[in-house]
Image 1 (cartoon, one colour):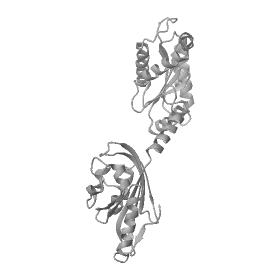
Image 2 (image 1 turned 120 degrees about the horizontal axis):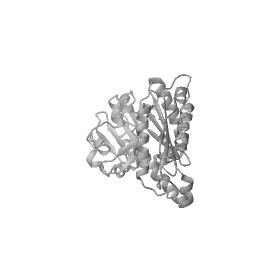
Image 3 (image 1 turned 30 degrees about the vertical axis):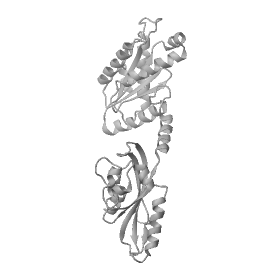
Image 4 (image 1 turned 90 degrees about the horizontal axis):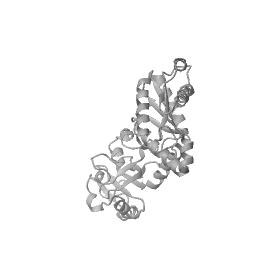
Length: 332
C-alpha cells in the first residue's frame, strides 16, 4: 500500500480541481467509496453501485454503508482506520495486513454475503487514510475488488493437492501431514491417538465381476459410509487402492473399537452384492491401534501396529475388527 494520501486543507485546492478528482473516482472501474472524518459517505462510485446493488443516493451523507456489505452492523475497513480500531481486523477478515509508512493502511480479504444482491463474493479491500497538508485525518478511501474466481481457483488447487479425486476423501499426502500434526498435538497434551486401517474384503473379485466402473462406485459408497461415522476432528483418508485410514484424535482403544464396529456394520448394511464371497455382500476388515505418543515413539509405529491388526482380521475370516496384541501395543 502507498503512504497515506495528503491533501491541502480546503480551499487551498480550487473547487474545480476537487470536482475533477471526484469525477475520476466516480468513473473508476474499481468499486470505490470515501467516508469523511465523521464516517459519513461522501463518494459512492458507479462500480460500487454495480457490485453491491445499492445506488449512491441511498448511502451518500449517511454512515450506513456497512449495510451494503453485511446483514448486521459492523465496521468496514475504512471505519476501522477512522476509529483507530485496526487491531480488530484479525477477528473480522479471513486475511489481512497493515501497510503504509506507519501501518495506517489496511488490506484485507474475506467472504461477503452481499445483502442487496444475495450473492456470496470473496472481496479484497484496500483502505487508506486521506490527510491534509498538516497530517490531519480528513477522510478514508476504500477500494473493493471482487476476486471470487481467483479464490475459487485457489480452493480447487488446494483440494487437488489434499483430496482423493475418486472419493473426495483426504488423500495419502493429507493423511501423512494430519497424522504428524495430530501426533505432535497428542504428545503435547498427553492424550491418546487412535488409528483405524480399513480394507475392502475381496475387492479384486468385485472388480473382476463388476468392472472398474462398478469398483469405483463401490469405493465411493464405502467412503461415504466410513465418513458418516466421523466426529468433527476425525479424519478419514483413502490410504491407497481399496484401503482407507481413519485418524481418531483423543480416542482410547475402546472407543476406537466401537467406531470400527460401527463402520463395519454400516458397510455391511449397504448390501453391495459380491456373490462369490461367504457373506455374499461387500464387507470390510478393520485393524485398530492406539498410542500415547512419547518422545521416543513415532507415528509410523502406530501405522504399523494398525496394519498388523488389519492383517490378522483378514486371516481370521474377514468382515471383522482386530485389536493389537499385547506386545504390539507396548511398542507404541
